[in-house]
Image 1: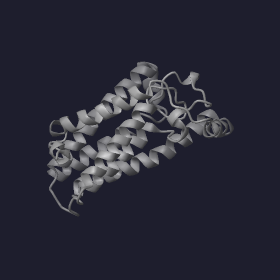
Image 2 (image 1 turned 120 degrees about the horizontal axis):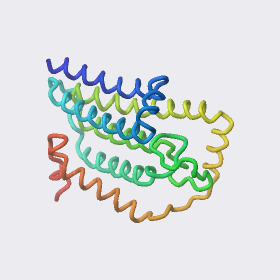
Image 3 (image 1 turned 30 degrees about the vertical axis):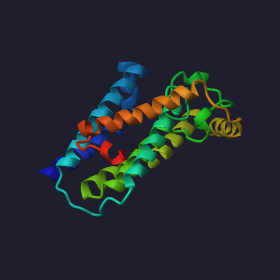
Image 4 (image 1 turned 45 degrees about the vertical axis):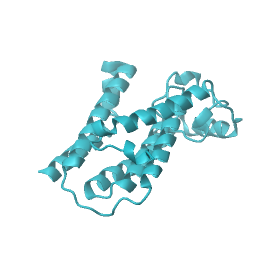
Length: 223
């Protein structure tokens, strides 16, 4: 039953992340929920399904593939810190080239900030999180989960790029990307606060890890 539950929930996770965002389902949902309502509902459902996948992976039979490499917890910490910084500097700002952006019509390609290097901050952070956790969870269920998450993030970047190029027009998309790459490098406003928020989020995740992941990790980083 453990494997059946894992496969069922796992399939549901990917159905949720493929069907609602494709036409004609997405336009139908947006027309009834609005853009903001659709984004909120989709985000909450995604988090709920992600939590369900975690639970199902923990309940699946434990079949080891490799032991945790020595010192790998520091790799996870570095990856999570990088992911936190990417989200801190990439979210809640205009980003017409991906999803998760706000006030997209005000986007200035001459001042792209982090988007100059990372067009898809959510997917990039998701890849760092899943890839690092793949290293330290060497059993079949977690390898399947984190490995597919990492692949999903990489493939998702290409899919979003292709979708935005189709929506914006290939020439407009290429011009915007070229202008972003040529823009001067400058720190965004409230950079110190964003860094502090990212580091605080990582600390909170470490402290809450026993509750949402079922295993404590704080002791690994203590002297």
